[in-house]
Image (cartoon, rainbow, N blue to C red; front, side, top):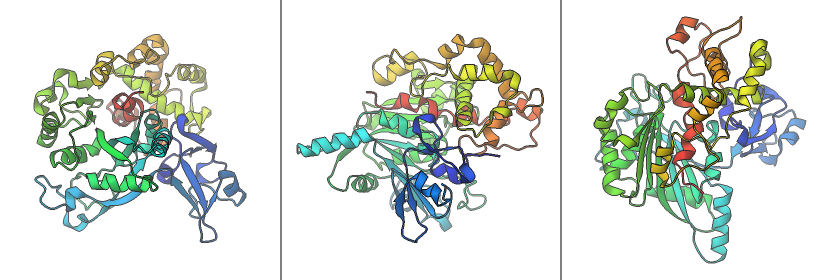
Length: 442
């Protein structure tokens, strides 16, 4: 059975906008190599640049220990300032045995940003890049296809700050997750590596917290680890918990960043358990809470997007789908709006950017209304086993179409599905669809 999990997290394309060449052998045969990946043949002990076709001539394929894959990001192991920096008012509660654990942080410079920096330095001017700090699990840049959004955001430099989940190998048994932060000096260090021939100026322009990354997002803000004075956006993606740390961070943004837009998205019951009551608990205004949780239109669009990606590279085979339904499914897939064109609502976009959404953009609701009969059938097929064929939700998770299994188990019954098993998609499929809405627009 094909899967896009495991080692593939480091080099596969999970969304067609980032497709490179097709992998022709090995564990990921048929998948697309991410176009941002670079290959090095290490069979001689001295890594040498190679192509996918050149490696294949030696029977080397991505995932092989002698074929090194590096993404076009600057990656560095940094100490966690929330664990190791002295004198913080709100240090992270990190178990002593892993207090000195170094976390990998990845920085991506879009080609347009680099070209603009090159052009300006030739004229004796330093570009001021706009840093987007994305606090997540650490894998979002590749598996959520976020480089594509960064490529379309002016002067952007994207930094993926990892988080900690209790299930991670290095986390002591019984320990609670903690935040991973970042400082201005760490950002400077990453930028100096990304621009080794000259220096660029920078401001922290936007900060996004997703999933367990809300811990690092909150604690980076309330410990004053980065300069917030020119922050233009502070966003939380489906991690709206009634915790003082979040409320304090939001209050800090209001105090220190007068120009910052604040938006908190609720997409799932697990990620946003308090519903509208969270407004008062976190000190949010009504228009700063954007609720997608419970929307059938949101569920249909995001899940169809991920399933379509699995069919696109053959990780999900056509014969996995009920043949009586396959033609209708493909017809619905053909109606999907482009990634980076779906916004949550016109009012939310207006509040975030001071202008309405692009005329070419749409919402999940508009898309669903235009395809309502097929959309309703898709939702039934998504959650119901039918004619000896798996419910489509099973295919999404057992093939690890977003790099992990979402808790999939072959023993899950229809009753399990009816009671919400495999519902992680409402949470995890949010960033690949809506991150662009919070980024600087052309």
